[in-house]
Image (cartoon, rainbow, N blue to C red; front, side):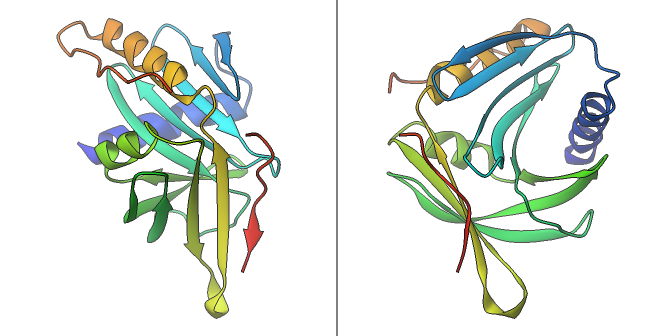
Length: 178
């Protein structure tokens, strides 16, 4: 199932990067945006370093992704440290090369979703060669209504699966290497 989701994400992102995707409607929620079309829905944010964090839904199946400014080997699985206001955890991610960009598909959907429900920002630390880490931080300003809209739109594409309600909820984040 995860492989099917992964293929759907790769296909959609490839279409976007090559300009072959159909025009999607785009709505902004503070630092987050939602784009939705006939078959796909995406809510995302970008930090000041142009790394992005988001949720992508193909039909009613959704995955969270991290799109860092970092090269990685396609199809490799790595650990990443997630740190939010209410949750800190080690989660998995899988690197996927789409066009000229790398996307990290994040495991533990519910854990990532719950970490986005509280606080003003979230960070991810990714281990690099030589004992260094890259840290990616993102604003959560607008995340809750954007993700809720994405989940609502995705549930409309498959009415048998209800959307998950989110509770109500500082720009200037850049990537750093430690």
